[in-house]
Image 1 (tube, rainbow, N blue to C red):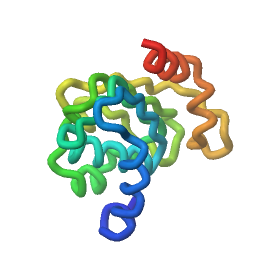
Image 2 (image 1 turned 45 degrees about the vertical axis):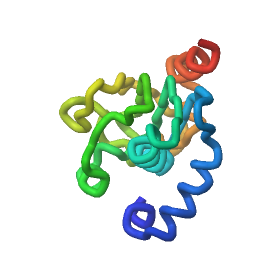
Image 3 (image 1 turned 180 degrees about the vertical axis):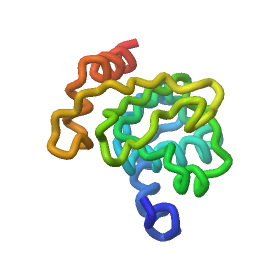
Image 4 (image 1 turned 120 degrees about the horizontal axis):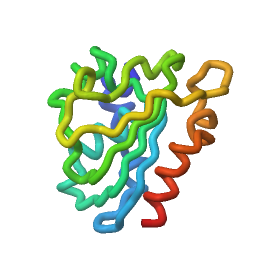
Length: 147
């Protein structure tokens, strides 16, 4: 995350790949984990409207977005205008996702729907498989893809 936030070359390379996956005008559900939540948030907030991206659902899991140093680097904090609904899931034991993305820690309008009771069974409580096999996370993704 530090390299992404402080090195324009690293940031540009990462964002180029994500940007290529989004198509103007095509509704796209975005699922992001860990550093990917920082990248997705930053790119959707900065370029979503200009690029014509339509994101009916953004799902973030294991997100460090509420860490003070990361929030500071991403100012101004705001809900990406191209995102209709944002769902965030975390395990309180995850060493990366320290705080929920709620009004106290990541205040945006409209607010983010948070699930803070994921039981991530991976060894470090941060692995993406431990988030994706949570029934509520899976249901949100499925519903977003089939609506």
